[in-house]
Length: 358
Image (tube, rainbow, N blue to C red):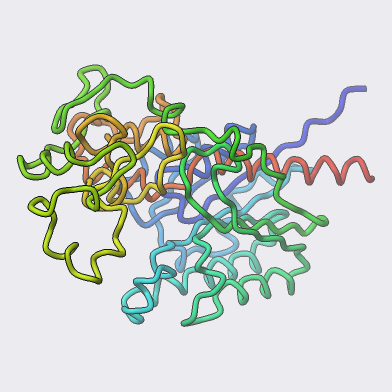
């Protein structure tokens, strides 16, 4: 007698352009819906994940609304996923305590929906700083909600290269199950076989600063002023502004406080993973975002590849018209799909273990 196939149904809160949902989909999970307050994410989300996009504030969503979206098929595993905005938990938030107050309250809304929906599995991804957030015990409060609802909870800080993601991003990943003990799958990589910058982008056509690839609308990079082009030409392989002659240095870097920003105007190296992608990563003045050997910042396509989006992923209906600022914001904000795959495989391992013990 054939084994009955387990179905997994996913609803994604704070879904953005669909990085997390796409990763879950790649592991065979059915994406039901995604919710986000940025309506311009709809095209990317629906085109790539197959789920329905809802332009709605999580504070206005009811548990009944979520439950009505699940199929109610017997045996289907209901998953509620979410990556609440991470900006409130950054170091910047400590200096601007009231600026993002509403945003860090969004995790409490996630907790409310868990209570009302009672899905089988909950997963949440955020910056590691959420665990030590000084303004409010946001993570501890969320875990308490889950435990009171009889969830087994596990969370850990993930170093993305350990899971085949070619950037040094660290993220806190939480998994919770009402069905039994759950854990994140073990790492598949070590320093000896990390996916590197060369692996991720070494095959792309070369570009000059300000140039675009005629066959790939996202493989284009920012123009540089003559001075910044001279600065980048003076930056050696793996180096930064610290390697420049004094006449090229910015005044802020000559001061004692500026010396701590050692990565800005820096070049990546082929043999290692890239730095963490950010919403500003297509500018050389925002971090170590210089190409290893070409005199330019990384392109939007390179950003997407470091984030593990496939070359076939459709971000915008008019990719050749979208500004680099907008493209890097969307892509840099996303959950790497490969991390979504790791989460999905961990959930599937968990369900398989339960079946074997039954």
